[in-house]
Every structure is written in structure tokens, then in C-alpha cells.
Amino acid sequence: KNEVEQSPQNLTAQEGEFITINCSYSVGISALHWLQQHPGGGIVSLFMLSSGKKKHGRLIATINIQEKHSSLHITASHPRDSAVYICAVRGTDKLIFGTGTRLQVFP
Amino acid sequence: NAGVTQTPKFRVLKTGQSMTLLCAQDMNHEYMYWYRQDPGMGLRLIHYSVGEGTTAKGEVPDGYNVSRLKKQNFLLGLESAAPSQTSVYFCASRRLAGETQYFGPGTRLLVL
Image: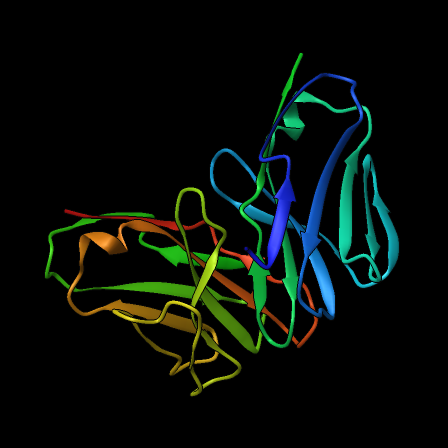
């Protein structure tokens, strides 16, 4: 069993839909990261959080430390949100990555 | 400010050949990392460095060597390439412990 599990693996949505991507982990962490990997391959950090909730534009990330679970929400999804979303948890100096959720948003 | 850059972007090697991938960052970051990304798997850490002159093994270090002679550069070497090393390689850096990592654009390596 992977230490970081994401669901779903693949997600298709119509433009405007509300999107939720889930991340569960089984190790103790100091922080959790959400990353976005564009179709061209580049990886960008979206959020780093250790408790509660963070919001940036249409993206919202939440974490429940007791349940070892985090969610990434996208409101009013748009085709430009199409990407792979990666959850990663930080133990000590290193990150442990999930396998990613591939999101496709159609007009 | 170029951020994190990687050279080359794409390379084809024959089994047994050697090569060096270069990662450079202009943000004065202490920590640097080399990852590989394979289909169906999360990014896996190959080697990392917590400062100039230091390196450490990650999750999948076999077949790779690294050097951090200058703070801004982190080199990943393949002494004798194998088809199993066909992958996309990402470099990343961050300033301090607990901060966000910044990723390079990746190097696609094909070993025949």
C-alpha cells in the first residue's frame, strides 16, 4: 500500500463543474503539498498546508490531520484547469508523492 | 530570475553510455533534489543536497551519482546508462526546511 493515495486517478468534468480531488496518507507529516503538472510537463506548487484550509482564486485546499486526509477543490472549473494534480506529504527533509489525479475539463 | 533550469531538455542514449544532467537555480536555495517520474508512479527521489558540498541518497539512488560543488548547481550523473533509467527527470530546489519546492521543466531521457 502506497503511503500517499489519491482518488480518483482520472476525472472528467464539464466546464463550470465543482471538482474535488482527495488525498489520504498513512505517515506522520509536517506539511502537505498540492502540485499541478501541466500537459507540457512543468510542475507548479499550488498549496502547502499543515492545518485547516487555504484558498487561492478558484482553488481551495483543506486538510484534516486527525483523519490523515486532504482535499483539493476547484470551483467553476475551466478547460485551462486540465492537468495532473499531485498530492505530496513532507515527513522530514523529503516529500512522498502520490501518483496524481488526471483532470480533463471540457467546454 | 530564471528559477530552476535543467539541461538538456531531451536526450537519447545507448545502453552503457554516460551523461550528466545539469540543474541550476538562481534563487540562492540551500536544498536541491533530483527526482524521476515514471508512468503510474509518483515522483521518486534519487538524490538530494542540503547545501553546497553535501549530497545524500534518496529512495532510488542506484545507478546515479551527484555532485554539488557550487550552491547554484546540482549535477546528476549516469555512469553506464540502462534502459530502466528511461524516465523524465525533475530537479527541484527550496530555500529552507519546510518551504515550497520549485521544480525545473524536466529532462526526458530515453535509453535504448
